[in-house]
Image (cartoon, rainbow, N blue to C red; front, side, top):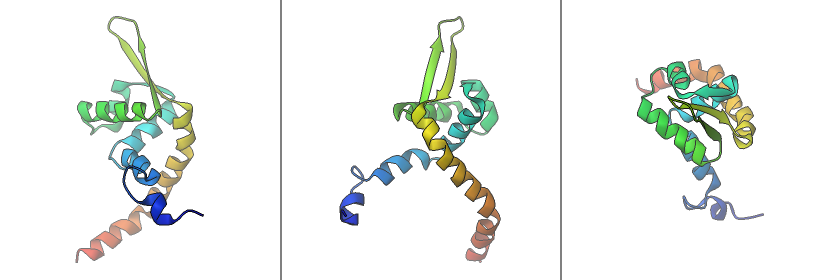
Length: 121
């Protein structure tokens, strides 16, 4: 078995840091869950569903997810242009893990909030 320090040392070589860097932001997991639920979604629909994300931040998030091969962007040659987003097979393979983490968050948010409140006293 490889040495644990060799596997996870250094940002560039660490698969955990490299992957979680993309999902540790405020919006990526929400976008993935929306795309899983809706299958094909237009930008404005994602924006309305999330509500408090800026258009710029949503654009950045979608581009990062597209760059990682998790989201596919399809432009239809219409006037005005229509753009739809959907999950790629790689993105779909991530969904069960995102759903598990989402469920864990729902199950534990009450205790986490209580712990934070007690910690700051």
